[in-house]
Amino acid sequence: ATIVICLLEDAIGRGEMAATGGLSKAFGGGRAGLQMGLGKLGRDLKLTDEQQEKAAALYSDYQKRQLEKLKGSVENLKKDPTALMQTLLASDAFSRGKITEDDYKQSQTSAAENLKGVINPLDRKNFSGGNPREDETFNREFQTLLDPTQAETYQAAIAAEQANPDEKKNAGDISNLPAMELEKLDGTVVAAKKMTSGLKQMMEGMGGLQDLGPLIEQQRKQQPPAGE
Image (cartoon, rainbow, N blue to C red; front, top):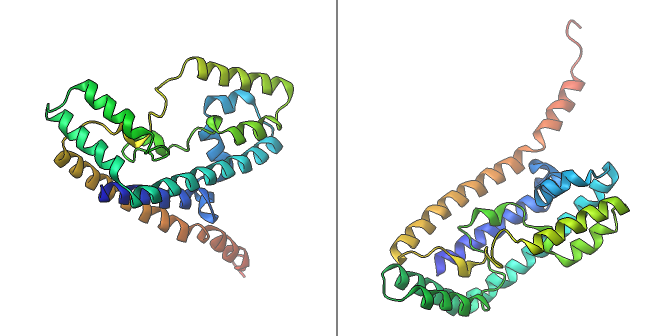
């Protein structure tokens, strides 16, 4: 359980680096994050520059709220990892044929309530910027920026998503870790941690270099023209 928690803490660190402070500019800024979060719907809405600027700020606030929720959930998990251990042991037992699929699903359901808000660190979808449309505050504030036609398009998309969800509710929660034996899970998590540590170092490097471009440009402007 400890190494899974460490992997979650790495995810929080990367999320904070990408979503807050100057480093967010290295990843395209708030507008790029907004486009990733809205997907095709963002293009369908045809937001003006002013709308994009305001919506990007709302998306940034949404990301910060999500990070705070995750940090709180991980802190609770560190204090009492019982539910996580229950999930890991049930996964191991099911993989070894010691319990039935129904028993395994029941164990997942039982643990899900205590693991609410804790993401599955092995699910790549959890690192794609999240779905702001599922956030009540973002939804409410974002719709105040839209004209009537845009609002109609947005509301229709939300209704369609709710009527035909692509995946089951809470699919990205840690209670839905893929079933595997503990030894295999341990190896998978160790490999994932190596990868995330490398990504974090890369992001730190990008943060250190992001001001280099403007400095080089400024130096170039200060140089006398060739031939003088």
